[in-house]
Amino acid sequence: MAEQLYTIPVNDAFSTDCECPVCAMFAELEKNAVEYTMGPSYMEDDNRAMTDELGFCAHHVRILYGEKNRLGLALMLKTHTDKTIRDLKQLSVNKPVVSGSLFKKQKISSVGEYIDKLEKNCFICSRINKTFDRYIDTIFHLWKKEPAFREKLKASKGFCTYHYGLLYDYGQTKLKQDEYNSFIDTLNDVYFSNMERVNGDIGWFIDKFDYRYKNEPWKNSKDALPRGIIKTNHTIIDN
Image (cartoon, rainbow, N blue to C red; front, side):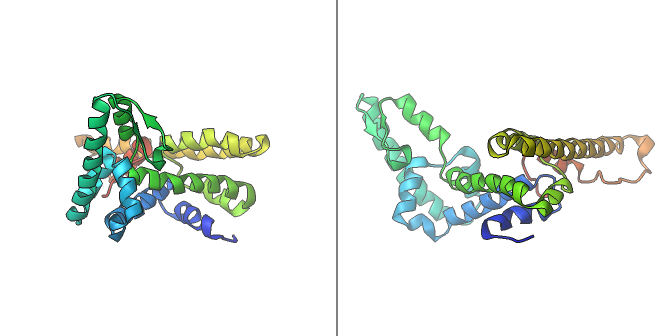
């Protein structure tokens, strides 16, 4: 299969032995975004302006807190809270504020509106999503152009429920009807067959706690829980 730069991460993910290659792609993007955020880049004016404006979601601020660079996180939180205090004081006395370029220079006129925007935005999420969307586009590009990729998808261990739904819906906008029909046939087959496989492994994991099965082999069930969590919660758990 001829590879171009933008196809490499997608092909690599679909070549891994994982329960959802889309989760694998997202996890790698998240890892890179966290490393970028906590690296020397946090001192750059452009990045600090974005972290001041967007802040971090609850999920990613917990990840950042677990990193070694506590000083970097403190500096970002300090300037972010400086801006938040300044803007909310102005809004609290009914004086609108104009948000930065990341909010498209939008005038915000209420405390609730401002806080709602903060809750919906995250510097790391924003960085991930810009690339992740291109990865999803690439899946459909490869499906249309590369027979070898179609075989790779058919041979995969399927997808988590969330990314199954994403691919199911998104394909309608990216593929012609006959291409979409073929894609859905394959998508349904790999999703349901592999969900049933993991479901069976979880069932056997449960059975192993029954004294009647004490001396039976574990088969493929020892890691059934982390694999089941990937399938149901699109969250990769380290064993």
